[in-house]
Image 1 (tube, rainbow, N blue to C red):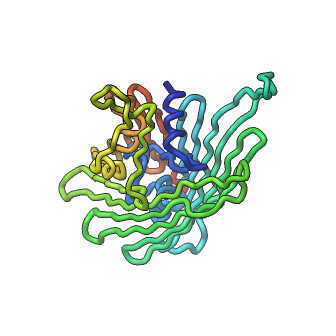
Image 2: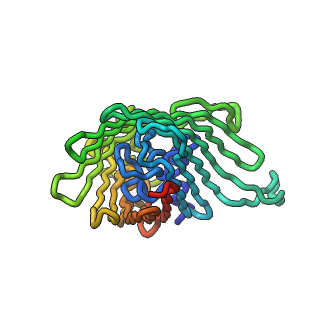
Image 3: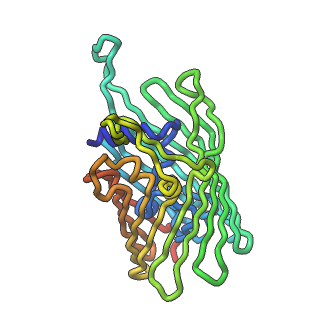
Length: 332
């Protein structure tokens, strides 16, 4: 089943460096995997929109780990360095991501073993953000690489983001253009596509209500992002012949949306839930329901430390956990 899920993921993801689209921390994973607007004094969130980085995260160290599909392991490290004479209007951040696919047995053309080899993807990013009144801007420059046995591919990418925080209400708006750049070196002679995305989102907490809602629209540069693999998505005509399944306009629209909810049990403890319709439609097995596309989690924040745990359901009975730890190196 895990091999099946991995195959389906690679089928609808036709870009190189597609690991950059994976949620890299538990907070984000619990809210559906995509968010462009959530402020929460959490250094781990600046990787989804560089404008979410601000001085409240200065001195924070974030460590994230996810035992992904099969033997893969996804690790992310985020840090907001402390500089002397730094102003409260700007902030720097550093991020390191690594997705290790494990070891594989190599063979030659006739099947003779040639020894083990490994495969992994990585990204090293530097972020700078600046706040002007209620508006923030940010940019992340990333060195991205993929290594497979003796082959490797390298790209230089950037994320550009902006946010607006309402002065009177708990309302945040965000926009981000992710993965703009170019491939420096590819596996072969064909330059691969990179996973560009344009996202707009809003996070809002109604007054006197202990719930914060987030809605994010993604892949806004193209309308139809549905992929119906005829091997999995089909129906039958009146003569009993297989025909490709059509996607309704409403379904195409909803595939662009991710919905997240935070239940604020206490100022230091939140329950999280999210729904990603694209993920559900791409990974759900025909005729099976289940909780595919849904995600859940919890976030505990102490004075110097924070911990988050989430689970994302990919298809019936299959999913993965993400663990995050936050450490504030500035004594308060």
